[in-house]
Image 1 (cartoon, chains in turn purple, brown):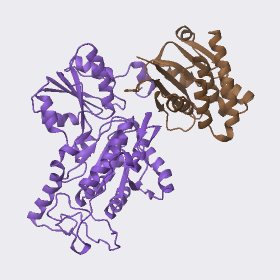
Image 2 (tube, one colour):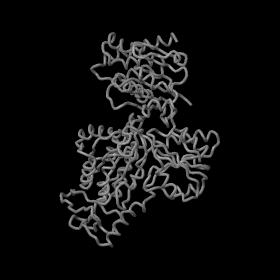
Image 3 (cartoon, chains in turn yellow, red):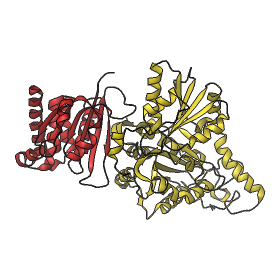
Image 4 (cartoon, rainbow over the protein chains, first blue to last red):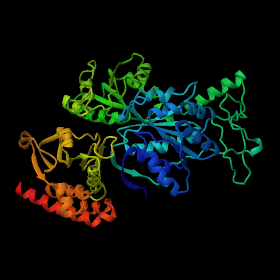
Length: 398
Length: 186
């Protein structure tokens, strides 16, 4: 049996990572993510697991890439400014195809922005932050309980597809303490990376006849070590660099196909009161909870509105969004940024429905009342959801 | 809607407002089988900056944990009182430290104000100013009975540093009595 706890999403992520089999953590503390390393720094040494407080953000993720390449499950955690600093090594992790979980507790940006305030401004960066034609998986839980299960899922997807997975939470989830259930590892599916069925002499880390070639651990049960080469340059099956156009194209296409061929498993989403909906709210993360309250309120008045909530933001659930667009009149994308996922939704909807945004990048949560107002009047701009009195509390501006 | 109760504990960093909030929330979750949320707000100053904890206790899951109708408000600093009185429901129970907070006359018509020298009593009668937050938790429970007294007492035992246990239990029981008295007097 697992246990009931009263935790914020940061602590929930830390606990869930251990359930998923976390074997190595390296990080550099940054608000509002620091409760993740704080908690792990206490628990991991007690379990004999390495926890490394590194000198900076890129060293942290580099250490994690090394650790996961050797065969253990690794995670690092940060917030926007630190996520920027990790991009180079995140690209390397995509190129090496190593399992890795990177948590980004989103705060207001750009740059150092709003250290203690929530945002959802790193959604596009999660997709395209690092350069090159890389695939990515990004997940977005809406509360601490879901953060537990999405963290476990992040590890599982990373292991199964040899793929870095980004877990996006935000500065409000990191402060909101709620009652949650932390399962035992036996109660949930825990995936470990596939191992080669050939002996070390015949092993190649990028074997051609696989969609996801097995990534051998550096130690074998019989004591005979797998030794191989991983390169961040374009490589052939041996892991050594090549500029051969045939293998270059093959590598990039396979890296994308290993994700796009398995959308059934990678995509996760929720339909909320969508059966007869004429208006669809698309929201994710903490904003989705505000949307839920707004929808309940509008439904009481007989307004036909529902929500489509992607838990997997990247790859985006294109087929599902396209299907919704063919059934509803209006699509409203609510997010704590100036319109990032809105762009993706507009692209996928392709003019089949009217697309509107509730966009607030003010460092405060979008309130249910703001989404409710937008449901009632989609073409009207939504203002910051705070009264003059409330704004006074923040000071500044004189 | 079934049972739904909102509390706000506000002070300045170091006074124990956040711990007081945690105790109420833990009592609800671990000793009462309710749902609860706690949202702490604080500044980067460890001591001296305004700090508050918003606690919602409910018999159903709490979807959007925003406190907009606060039933009970504790303010142990003028700065905290002024900054955070905005979301109180009309006739909310408001407990303030009489030595540190001056309640404006117009607020006395809006809310039920209970003034008590929390800091002074904690320091001179109980023996340590750090027990002030537990004294306040006691008064809150005695006055409102938002949760079962024993559930909260058990949680106080679990949450306070063991070396201050006796002193804190004394503070809690004293607070209960004062709260009950406030309740009778109305």
